[in-house]
Structure formats: structure tokens, C-alpha cells
Length: 107
Image (cartoon, rainbow, N blue to C red):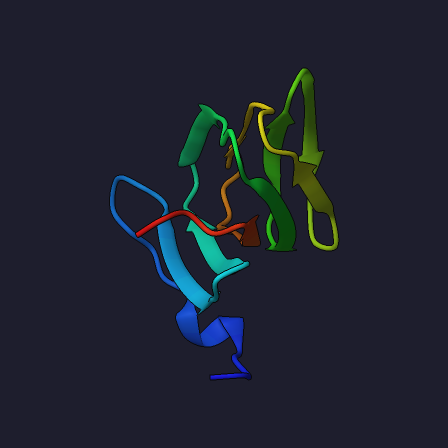
């Protein structure tokens, strides 16, 4: 599959963020994540993987290292390998963003 519309892969999951993989290769993973109001991904880090977020819909509070910022559609956020990062949706609307990891996680 070389072409995909992220809107065909959106959803809501009760109690935790909804995630769908759009592309997965040996060097890169691209997914779409949907966070309902009040959902989040706790601050964590990946020792050997760079992570990028690109906000498509809604607004979220993104943490990267010591920086915390509210980001909306069009914002790109980079969390280099070894740097703490996380995101929360503290709005009344769904947050949708693309997430890329390189290299992809094993498994």
C-alpha cells in the first residue's frame, strides 16, 4: 500500500488513545493517533528512536524535554531519541495527529 487517507483510519477507544498504523517499513513507522477529550500519552522516552508528531485536528499539550506547548493543526513536534515526550488532550474536542518513529519499534 503506497497511498492512504488518514481519515479512513480514525477512531475513538474507551479509556486509552486510539492508534492505527498507516505505513510500516524497516526504517520508518507512520501512524495516526486519536485522543478523545481528557486522554493522553504519559511522558516517556525511546532510547534509540526519533519520534515526530504532526497535528491534523484539534489541539493538544505536547511535552518534549523541559518544554510544554499547546499545538494545533499544522504544528510539527520533534522528540529526538533519549528525550522525554508526551501529549495530553485537555480540550472538549478530539485530537488527531500523525506519529512517525524512526527506526520503528521491534515487533
